[in-house]
Image 1 (cartoon, rainbow, N blue to C red):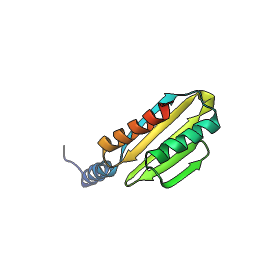
Image 2 (image 1 turned 180 degrees about the vertical axis):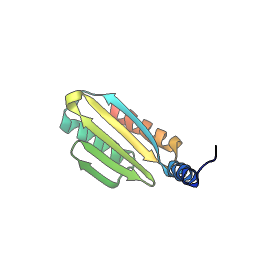
Image 3 (image 1 turned 45 degrees about the horizontal axis):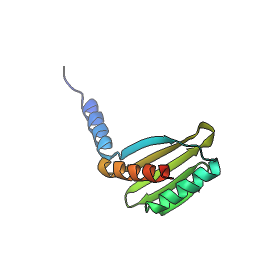
Image 4 (image 1 turned 90 degrees about the horizontal axis):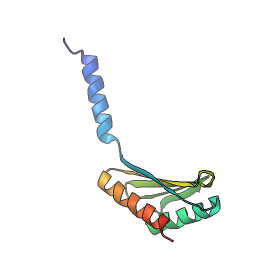
Length: 108
């Protein structure tokens, strides 16, 4: 069976898109903080980890960046959970940043 040029271009385009996709590390922690305390702790943890570029709190989520890496800590006190997401070019670095954020958040 012969490949069509359109199918070959579609495969090439999807492969190129995957190559440009960022690495992401996602996780969560159970927590017993109020919504306000979770946002305050997320803010402290994010800033303490140096993710201060484009720092902002929007609703239930704290965002920050450093270099080519972006992180978010989302608080949901009604479900007693905090979500952590880090994205960037290298999975090794997203995992490291993610681990630091979770460890700092989980510390007393």
